[in-house]
Length: 406
Image 1 (cartoon, rainbow, N blue to C red):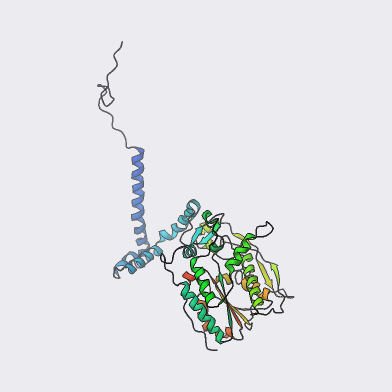
Image 2 (image 1 turned 180 degrees about the vertical axis):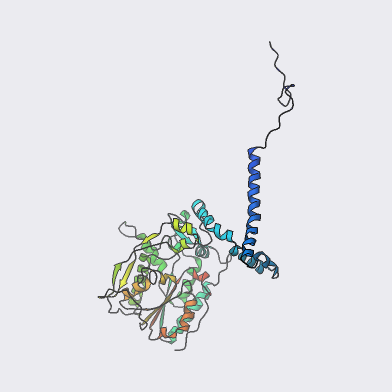
């Protein structure tokens, strides 16, 4: 038998000699490449920013940190200013947001991605779901109720009645479209909203409860699915939602005798619009905005009888409507005269006067009313609309604003 060539413990024959030197592995080369790219980014981007600012004769932004005391507020402001001034951040942010949305379902700071293509306003969801002790807002239900009651009493001195119309957050009506875990939720009205309703009832403030009305309308009849009351891509209600709200408010006013039906027989005509919702615009990413298909919205325009021109407010009307962007959408936006105000006027058969402040129904709209006292002339009723999330997030909180002298 032929003896086998013995091997050493390294697995080599004694006469093979030392092992040949091996080239660097592909794994090691990839590590070196990634490190080089990382260093190029963290060094090259700031240097490019400095060169850009210097070539334009601008003040070097990174030196601003030495011009103020290093307090926490100044450092946060410095960090924010650096980010806003960075050309690289402005160039890359839209594409990063694009990738986050399509790959991670991340809508950014203001948008939450729900189910079936529905989007939600993130600050509103947080305000409705977080406990007050976790994230303090600008106001409380107690402050809101006190301000509403005070406003009611101010109007009563002038012989003017007040009706309050809180509009539910989108997620309060359709929590199942936000998350599957809410599909069996029996009560989606937040604790702070229930607190407000309780306080207003104790103060005998007239309130139209759209929460109950919208919840009942969701179930439908005769096994037919009702149209959605909110827009999928937008934080506002749909034409079906605003029409239901207008008819509900009108029915309450006529039933209580606080308003009498007028003599104007308004008509309606289809005025569909195709547009991207405000929650898509909040991405602030042009590539993402272009990639998301806009919604086709079946709006209905309210028109004057006989002449067929669009509905218009009347400053001499007996009813004044105050509110926020829920009154603006489709009313002064495309297609115009198709919003809550026009449909309420149609349900009451009379023109109205309106005052709208985007995002400012809690206080800003009453401040504007103080500056425009003529709006209260000859008024018998004020309808005050505000969205649910303003209980915590209302601009300027819920400050008590004096009415102008009669």
